Length: 489
Image (cartoon, rainbow, N blue to C red; front, side, top):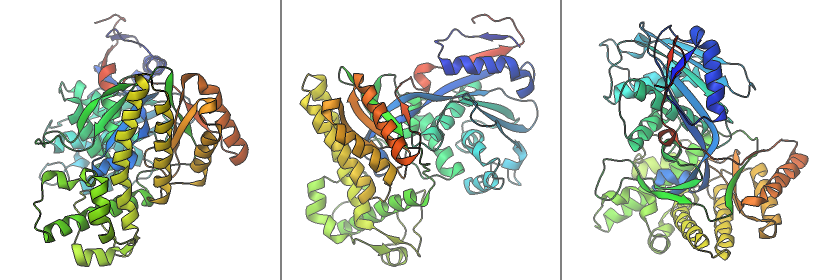
């Protein structure tokens, strides 16, 4: 097969994808259909993490690891998905549905609950919710009515279950390719929210929005500051972009993958999230008792200043509380993607502490980065201390730590600034996955030494993530026309 394509800035993942497309497109797609592709990276969570769903500021950077999704429409009703690993470390995965199975008796797209159950029915096809879910969300959110099916090819070198937003990268790549293929010009934040809806409502994982925004709008070599709540006075956007920050000269953020599988769909993550929303509901109830006005900003824990939280509210939040007791006294929380389990016991105070103080730590960390960028290298030591504090809170307050990631953080601390390593913290949803490391750019040898000692102690081979790449919008779409001589459009 030959391809006619737009000129592009090639990277190795895209080159591998194009080589595969030349070999296999005639077998994967219907002949002669124009193909649109998007590339979306995974991310390293430098600070903020799970506080995103409480409205925190987060500080994220795109990784070199990424997913490329290609989409051509079909002239029948089939929806197909094929996932291929660029590293050939697993077998290709396939899934196929009839578009009519997504519709109810009136021809409308089924509810998210029904769609989620449809994907979950076949464990071998459940992964495809990350990709085919884009079709359901685009239609349910009123952006396009699908009269025919389509095919998706997912080409990836993503470490799955590593806590680096791999699922978000797949969702963003698929949504971006689909929207571009349909001629829809969707703004980046809006597309990020659509991709998040795939994860929340179709995949069934209660994540915040930071992963999708970083994958869509991140820039190579920079960290994106994002407030995970609508801008003041406007509910049009689900979050507020605070800017792209260049790291201080000679500084990098590395990732070390513990190889302990992580999932935001896990019980521990949902429990931590529910605890935070329980704490918020208790605080809102107290404000109502005091006849204080309730503003839009009060919907987010992270808008409470830490001193006020400690002085006025923290003592009112029980350390532990059963779901049944909470529901009896306060009713359900305001969280749209989780529900309180009456039979569970929640560590409500600790779960509430984390996002309130994490939001403060993130903003202090960004200030340290700005000081270091201006030449104050002592600020890097302060920034590292904030990372270690965040790591501790993940485990102690949220129950999202594990022995392996604690070991990685400890090994970084032992080497310290003398070896060019300033700080480390568990990344993303915790409970395994990747540890982010703030370090001198020339300290990669020390980072790999940490990974080697970790492997010697645990028997788990730790990957080191050292590269960066642009998000889906900075990289831009790629378009191919099968069956013609190769030439730039």
